[in-house]
Image (tube, rainbow, N blue to C red; front, side):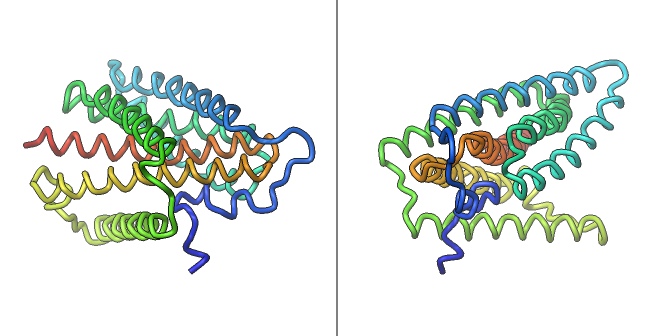
Amino acid sequence: MASLLRTSNPALNERAFKGQVAIGEAMTLQGTVNKTGLLLLCVVATAAWTWGLAHSETSGAAIPWMVGGLIGGFVVALVTIFKKTWSPFTAPLYALLEGLALGGISAVFEKTYHGIAVQAVGLTLGVLFVMLLAYKTGLIRATQGFKIGVIAATGGIAVFYLVEMVLSFFFHFQFSAINGGSFLGIAFSLFVVVIAALNLVLDFDMIETGVRGGAPKYMEWYGAFGLMVTLIWLYLEMLRLLAKANRR
């Protein structure tokens, strides 16, 4: 049971800060917040690049950047998770690569549903603010039962997406009811958005755990990186939810 009591975000689980004790300057909450802001700026900068390419006359030029961002971001994320001391360098690189992917993906949705990207950004930031407020005021607490519930739900979503990807790739089978604009499809996306939002609470809790435990200064970058992983997932799910709602 103890092994389950960790955030479902692999970047910010209990093991992430285990054994990370500061020899010099220690991790602070304000430092983590500042670095999260810097990573957000990195995402916006490169997202603007692929967004512009996707809306140019040679819109196909954005595709290699998108694919490179997706693959590169995944690789750098794995490196960051296993080499936390590299996070001051790999966390900004991860944000830059993910920005390339998000800019292109957002542009694809925007061409079909005008204004959806701005709505998704606004909702994502709004959810971040609300969940942070709920966490700081004690309205939502990262209790043992809360952690187990969120982790189980997140794991179930991950398994479903994996099965769907395999079935689609090898057998050309898709869950049209889930992926379409039906009531079931919208309800599923809304459920995923809620679970992604609740993961933010677990991330906040683990960052505070690192601060209280006196983690080294570089873990501010690692904490910001882990939070970005959840925010990017939340944004993508917001896009899917809004797209389904628009189809109706």
